[in-house]
Length: 594
Image 1 (cartoon, rainbow, N blue to C red):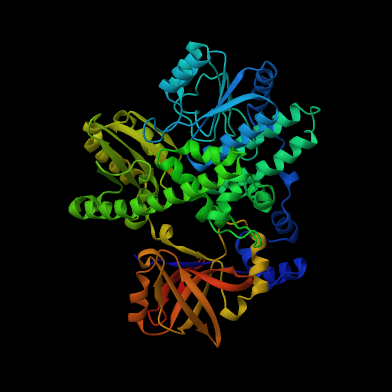
Image 2 (image 1 turned 90 degrees about the horizontal axis):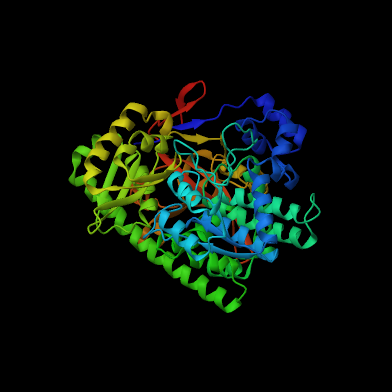
């Protein structure tokens, strides 16, 4: 379905005033106005966000009680076990808290459940095992646990002290843990509700450092640790795709600036394997497309403990070996992902009635349960509807998998509505994991699709591409793009600015690049100004553009590409339209022509 380009309206008087007031280019001023900034003070506050803008850690609900319990355990030399999740957010959160407590000479270790054998979150078998090994230990969950009602009840029954720190959605009741730390606890009013698990762990570590310092400030040694911990929190924040606004934007902005300088041995080895040059400016996309997939590969393929070991090891040889191994795992993951995506599309084609369903539930006995979450996202985008993919265990008669939303559909609410068919589930509005008996799959498929049909409708607005402004290619200069990058780091709810240009010609025929020709590259020219353009994952556009045979309109996000010490402006294509098609575009005032 063709995308409609929605151009943000611009009051040129606002643009001129903001440009003069802030001494920025009109292009930058247009973007600021498009994003809701109408005066220089508000725009400057956003652009110049500082670490001091982070809320004091004591304001995070539950932190003060958690710190008291943790410090008491450290001083009593009790064993402390960090129970983490297996994704990047959980791995970085575990590493932050582990480093913090290790530097305090605590008796600390960590437990990461196997994604393939134990599934998401705290599980009862693990609770029993931890209690049997040491009934006096303190267990601290990170990035999981807020929906673990049964598991917390078991811990309480056994007498195992459990502190839950999390950011996910609640179940129908809160777990009866000794203490809960969560930015959205009922009857609390923490100013920023969108922290990820690593952000929560960073705030908790910060509060512990203050408590074990002079009560108000951490010791110089622990302040040094907190600077490096911001970098790990940035990795978790970007990887978990939480809004890069408010505290998250501050964490990522300053975390990116410290990653190279303060990186651990393992993270430094990972940066080298990922070919991220320490001489270039680190971007959030470097985390999202290079670091996070490699760390995530360990958890997806059932070896998340190796990712934590990589981030905590003090052995340089081990760090290099782990980074190389995780890189190889990630290559294997990509191969598996391509195969599953192909099979998922074939399954829908074989069941044509599903194309009329408002949501998809696809199953296969051979799909890797650690990879199907990524594929579910691709399936949702391809079919433009929410999608759940399940791996079927023949021996246990269990389906286990992951779901992804589309166009704002609340996936977690849908699972709550269908919970009578499920054994376990958890997550949030955009992504979730679940498990159910195989004899419930058909009924769940019908109920899930029915809920989507009744509660969600994909409209043209959901398929729109938001464009900040129409520009000439000559306007997209190195200086202008560097200025625009002050709006970053870019990510969820703070995307890179997107521009559009019309009457663009091809300098030469476009061609594919990358594994299997997945990506497109071409050189485009407008009024004598030429730039290179890349479209990731859009290799199929090559033939379409060639067949078009004439000028095109393009929408794109400009970036600075650094290669061998040289910097050039490059366009990341978002969409294209034939120049002669009078393709529809819209502004806030109504339809127009792009």
